[in-house]
Length: 226
Image (cartoon, rainbow, N blue to C red; front, side, top):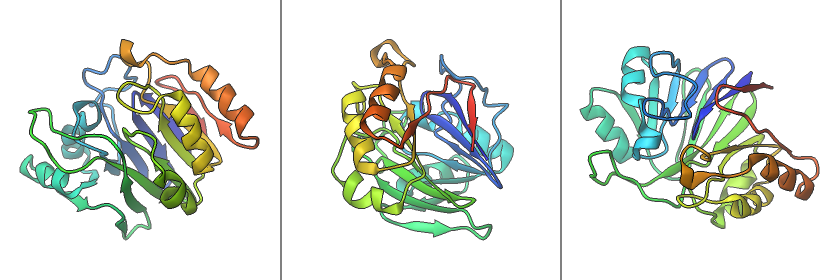
């Protein structure tokens, strides 16, 4: 298995299946992948903002990937000619091939590129090849990370650290402590000037605060093998 970081909040997890989350590639100044190159069996989309929805429609149509999203966003996908599994907060689903996904809250906002409001933003917990992953999406720090999300026994947590639109490093450090994951990947930073952060410093702070946990800082285009 491996984890690929493609820039901003776009992460790929590859094992028996290829999972791609928030495929914002076209127009992304930090993207290491083009929409034409992207491959996926499952596309998870946390919310409708353009820097997360990204190229999901085009990738799904080309690859036949199964899209998973909040029910209102899934309905919008349907209008674009893409069949999507529309779920809601707290719900989980296991596909026939064994891939399991669960929607959890994210404290943020959500709308489509045309400005219309659609559903709520979410995070995803998913299970692949015996490991548990959490992609927080765009979120502020909130207490249910400790009470609702952490009890799943996370192997990996992908956390925004960019500040301004999401948690910054200080809040992300508290989130990491609450989540008690074994591994962390900082996301949603340095894509734009407003999101400039020192990920190496965040890594040092996290590993000093949480002995035994590991923070993986990946540049767009880099990956780590599990």
